[in-house]
Length: 212
Image (cartoon, rainbow, N blue to C red; front, side):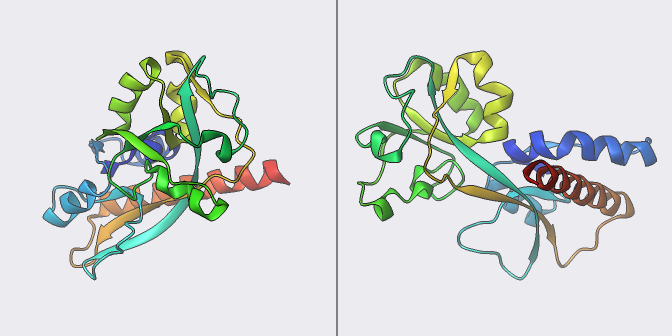
């Protein structure tokens, strides 16, 4: 199963535990699969399932996507960054931004659509292939980066990162599960898919109850 960073934290642990409670003899392999590489791995048969964001360019007829859960984003900087107390996107004009992953992916600050607020687009000064690389460099730089909130909560504070208290609306990335349409899932793969869907449903119920 290919998993994006947010999916690995939000869905995989409990879903795999749920699956192994009924299928303890089946070994599950989780693969760090960044968008959009995971879809190529899925098409080649290297993966049975992939979890991640829906490609901006859409899918071909050979793949099916099922929405699971929304993943909120945060803007992160190193602790002590001059912009660490910024409350509005307008405060970030002129900041040095990091693009994480592919353009138009979840780590692209273009998702902030600053132009709609009458602001200049983010100025990209560094590109990182993965969020793991971002974590290694961001604590040492005066840069700003967009990342999944769950990913930040798990890793950011312990390595010296801070989330900006932005009052403006920040983007949501919907995590999907992808599967091939031309190849039926094996029974274990189907049961793992069921576990992922159940875990996403449980998370949505928890969110709804906390909001209510």
